[in-house]
Amino acid sequence: MDVKGHGAIVTGGGSGLGAETARHLAAAGAKVAVLDLSGEAARGVAEEIGGLGLACDVGSAAEAEAAVAAAREAHGAARVLVNCAGIAPAKRIVGRDGPMPLEAFAQVIQTNLIGSFNLLRLAAADMAGADPLGEDGERGVIMSTASIAAVEGQLGQAAYAASKAGVIGMMLPAARELARVGVRVLTIAPGLIATPLLLNMPQEVQDNLASQVPFPKRFGKSSEFADLVLHIVSNPMLNADVIRLDGGMRMQ
Image (cartoon, rainbow, N blue to C red; front, side, top):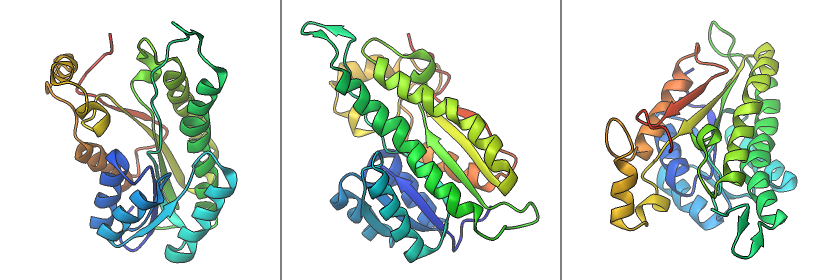
């Protein structure tokens, strides 16, 4: 699918993977709505790319519905959705202070898993009602961001790994259901990407982590994630799959 002239929505678009994805989509000619919990960050990226910046808690039904409606009003029904919004707090199930508060687990699930489904359901409804494009009759493509932690979660990642495993788990039934209306659904599972979360760690920690990547021995780049997004959009045979972007890394 050619995104030129079509609407796209990127959640978590105020920074990191989402911001770079928004930039790449805009450079390809898409009309991008940037959603982020921080309205200021969303508007900053949107101003840079000539898009629409909106404050949105992806875990809120009302806020997501309002944001998708605003994006539709500005750009028409989105043909591309990229779910990048997420949180990754580290907390052990049983720590020095006792068991993990249930609210801490629920918050991660609410943002990462329910938030991804929340935007998926809304964007899919708009795509299903849009006119088909091209000879295949495609109406749109939805990509959510998981993590290799979904299958190889480390200590302190029970909530994060569970949320990302859920993102992977809902992908296949969503792809099967939406195939009848020409909407593709995929998941990208990054490894270690050079976002502020990693780059703010001590250099010796960064070096140790990067050494665990077989090849290339470095963190991935946000631009490499965004390049993959654009390739998925352009390649109609990519559907119902999880694509790892990790340099061959398997978490210890």
